[in-house]
Every structure is written in C-alpha cells, then in structure tokens.
Image (tube, rainbow, N blue to C red; front, side, top):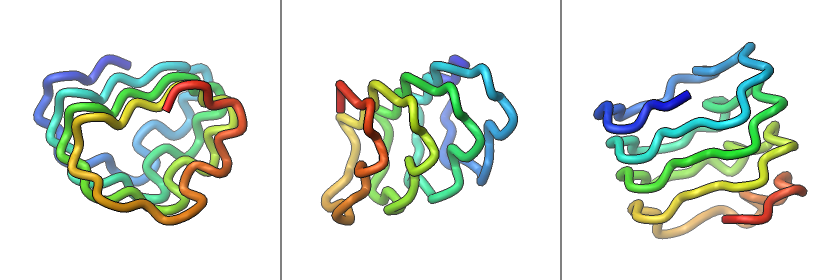
Length: 97
C-alpha cells in the first residue's frame, strides 16, 4: 500500500486488518503523530514498514508485536524522544531499523 503524501495524522486501530498478503506499507511523508498498539494488527506477511518523515512522538510498547516477518522498519525523521524498553523485542527478523 502506498499512502505517502496524504496528510494522514492517525492510523486507526486495525487499519489494515485482514490484508494477510500485504508485505509493504508506505506511510512516510505524512503527519502521523503516534503509533498505537493495535494499528498494525492482522498483518502476518508484512516485511517493510515505512513511517519515516512524519511527526511521530509516541510509539506504544506493543505497536509491532504481531509483525513476526518484519525485516525493515523506517522511523527516521520523526519526533520520537524515548521508547519503552522492549518495543522492538518481537521483531526477530528485523535487519533494518
């Protein structure tokens, strides 16, 4: 899904739920303020998640808990100042963070 440049401010709970074959989401270059715990639920095939160049200041501790196949997570150029210990603990296949 390419959702770049859409002025998105919020990712609703389970926004992509049921998209079991989805492997890439481009949400970069928006105005997202936070990543809640259930925003990316139900995405068993997701490998690449682009959240860079937003205004993210808060990432829920379990925001990425169900993304077992995630390989690359892009969060650069946001307003994140701290993260809860273990936020990325479930990302066992991550190679780019």
